[in-house]
Image (tube, rainbow, N blue to C red; front, side, top):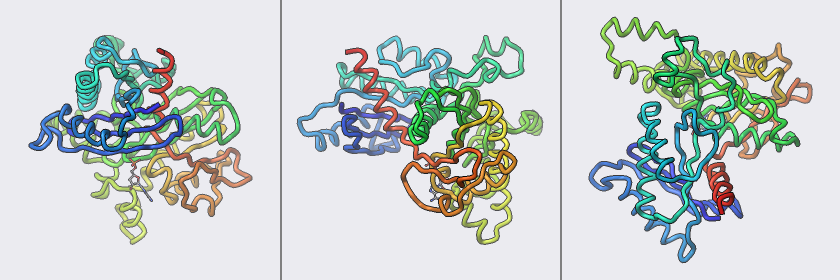
Length: 376
Ligand code: AMP
């Protein structure tokens, strides 16, 4: 099937066309600065996509559109075929993901107007984590806040965690439903998931993507009282949002959110960069210990996304701290550059350590094709 994958942001639209029968990418692109002079809105951005598709596809036609939707709330645990009611349900989740879901809805409505008969599927970033047990998704705050505002842990990066778990199971030669492991998705945003029987049972991002690991620009876990302290010092809500989501993490500690630059700076003797890397690696090592307990003994530890797939020094500094669990890296395998799924642990390691490249677009295309086929 020919699937157009849409990742619609508030001022950008990323797209890719994939042929799921060959698992190939026909074209892809990014339209930025939507809302400014050249591209007034998402509908105009789609006009540009349509022109590009006309050039590439000739007389072939699309079979479906798959949308990356950030928040599926408590309702969506699986990809769904979009109709008006579903679009409204996604829109009702806007308060939970104010930067993302409104843009996702704009993308869906723009396609509905342009190609009303083309099936559209919404694939949710939160869906994979819907299997978390209540003791993992509850915050220890009054129940009223959950009932009134939906304040609970949701988790994100689900499409990647699920895809990578399946690929890891394949590499281990077991069924996806038999996989018990820990998946660390380490990109500019970062989260780690405890997977048991192929299902997410815990994950480090929570009510929003801010919780958990040290990220490019996000702090991850901090004492919430820091916010109260800063509020009393005169910080506004907007200031705190910017501070923790955009100006913290590696960027806050070193001035850059980029792992490669941070590593280079540390290699050149920059002590701030070195300590930032240690903070991030230590936080991750602690989560791995915790999730080893959560899954009752992981069968594998998996690294993915920009940092997980490429930053061998960072993987080394994380796994160095896992000696007590009997996990160890093969130095040459860890340093080797590759874009293939691979094992990087020693033969004597208690469990394999894997590097599995993530591919969210491939996962969205597969999910979209499966939903559309089920409805035919
Ligand atoms: P992502 O959000 O998955 O694209 O990941 C982005 C992060 O991956 C950035 O912090 C990059 O610096 C990091 N990254 C990408 N390639 C490399 C590399 N070869 N070595 C170290 N870090 C890398």
